[in-house]
Length: 103
Image (cartoon, rainbow, N blue to C red):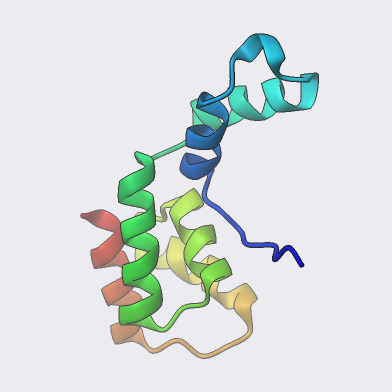
């Protein structure tokens, strides 16, 4: 049974960069183009950051991936995303998240 696991835009770019563009279908090309334009980190940094957010800040895999894709820069930007998660995140945890993301 396959398990659906969210991956960051950086990881998508890494996966698609291993495929010759001549063999990609139109959706794959569009996705690769998008990932190339909007990936904010290299894949290894994104994976390490995701692990740190999950371990140190007790975020879910999905939440950590969302933050890596968006890379909020301020506490108010971060709060706008975490508000939608419908769970209480302490101010000190939010500060820790920003510190991890800003490195």
